[in-house]
Amino acid sequence: MARHGKLALSFDGLAIEPYRGSSLELRLDLNYRNLQKLPDDVLKLKDLQWLNLNVNRLRELPFELQYLKSLKWLYLESNSFDSFPLVLCQLRELFRLYLASNNLNRIPSQINQMINLRFLDLSDNSFTEFPLEICTSSLVHLEKIFFDGNDLSSLPSQISYLRGLKTLWIGNNNLEWLPQSLCDLEHLEDLKLTDNPLRTLPAYLGTNATKLKKLHWDGCPLIFPISESLEKEGTEGLRKSQREINSRAERKKFVEFRKDSKDSEEKPCYAMRTRPRGIAVIIDNLCDLEALSNGENDRESPAKSARATSSTVESVTESTNALRSVLTKLGLNVRVMRGLMSLDIISALRFVSLEDHSYFDCLIICILSKGSNGRVKGPDGISVNVDQLTDIFSRSNCPTLADKPKLFFLQILEHENGKARKDDRSLRKEKETESIPSGVERKKINPLNDNRLIPNDSDFLLTFAFVPQNAICSGEESVYKFYVEKLFILLEKYARKLNLLDILTTVHAEVRKKRIRTKNGYDVTSIDPIIQSSLKYNLYLSIHTSGTESRTKNN
Image (cartoon, rainbow, N blue to C red; front, side):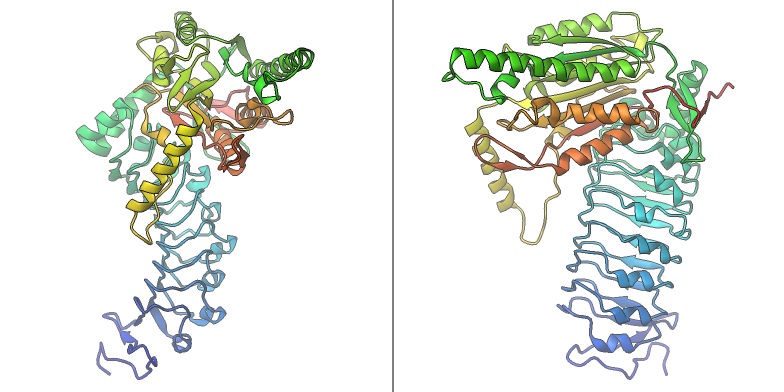
């Protein structure tokens, strides 16, 4: 038989035959065949090594596929898979798997049986979380992962388990931050981050990932020190810049290295040693909304209104005290301010910025108010840009907080004309739908991430939870419980054990799952909070316990 000669086996109705490739491997092309079912004749090719099923209409694969023990290359791009076919996990010799452009959102744990897998393409699917099932030491040979075009907001710290990883493409997602464990991928050569709302990179990425040669970051609003170094000298510039910044932080003992019981690798984290930790300011401008949410209106009798007002005051006090209690337990000096006008918010924060923070480790600002995208409104109806508030604590405006974490937690209740806003949304959605070609889905992007809400400086973290207008608040669920109370409950529970960004990711995932009703009868998707972070290191807001270890570089 000739080296590229065709084999005798034929496929009725498909006018296609398997053939031998240049390396004598048996190949079969069945792409663009409009297949809804795998032809039975394919399962007879026991020596098949290369199978192309791209651009068909397959939703599932037959159980018998597992008997193709020699299969090494499998192309399943642009089909109709809603779930990862379990039978693929039985293909132990497979080392290249292409599943791009389907509708996958999870991976089965049995993928750890694919011990020879080297190449995995899951681009353009429906993942909202990077599958932990992939992050296993069993996939020791996995070298290339393509995860572009999904809806990821973060990567798990367990990504470091993929020790052999050389290529990681995670562009065109919604990544808000990257874990420090990314620096442990010592064989990483090619990292694609394009078109993500990232503000910073892990602090030791340049120095620890010594083999990193390609770093694609177009479309990422990285802060100035990082973007400048990459523009000038690429990855070498990043290494020089991070080495200088980290050396300064280590000399000043602003950073220490910690490992916990779940991770044998030490990670850099902000030093948290002082008591009090720092100043925490709660600005509560939502207190007047509790009366509305508890059913007060002009038609109620004065006596009933008075009872409701008294109940509301107690509810507001209880909610604010709960927030204060958590921050106090975390070792912060807490100040609560209510009903501040817009200019008063600016003045209050400027006053805090002028204080001496030399003996403090951090700053926390929690703002609960009406507003709009990227803006806060006081009771006077005047808007203040959020970036105007965060800039008050920039390196130049508040030098005693330089290189220390500055945290902003914002819960903003939409304050616009309800009918106009609803009509605007409907029109915008109709226009977007009309402009998208059939068969193409638009990736969900939070418009808040288009705004730079933190300074072009390191060591900032901001969360912004935008609550839709007319969201119903009942006695069982006050306006405070939409976001900020959930956040503070988990802060109190896990501050000793988990990095702050891991806690926030957990909270945001839970908040996004819950659906809320509005007073006008519409059922809307729940709040979609965002994170904008330029934190250089991990952050634990509580004292180390016996289950953890930490040290400084100078120890």
